[in-house]
Image (cartoon, rainbow, N blue to C red; front, top):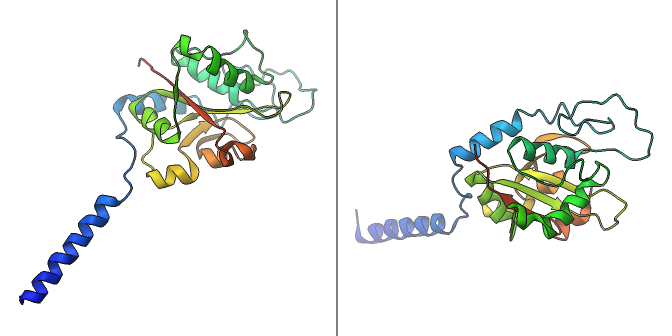
Length: 212
């Protein structure tokens, strides 16, 4: 190999190394604790229970048989989060302390005012939320509607290996009940019914340790 060719090859190798060193890295490694936590949550069958429009038992997500007579979509994001937290031995505001109506807004306020005393820690951003979920903490993403008489939204952050660019573009994935229940959907899409939530960075994140 000639000297100029050796130099060119060395330069190309250097460039490749620089590119990889500067590339966005996935979030922290998903721990066995995080995998075990998600097995518990996935087993709750959110896509088959807590169905919008049904009057449901908040703990099970099964229809109560009571007809809904008031207007609205009657989604159950907050009931699902409350049930999931209870299954994991964690308290978040729930019935009977607060009814299912407008519970997501009330949970948002409760987390800010009383959550710390019950073990909830506020996180700085979506990146911290993803890292905490990957370590096996129960992490919620919470939005308070601008209008107190309209529902907010709340979901549980899933462990995942999204890059920092992906998290910035669409947020972590979450498991949620809502207009459409999903075991995995990005925060941007999951909170799409509340355009200001993702667009204006109004979603707040809280984490709580879980013993499994």
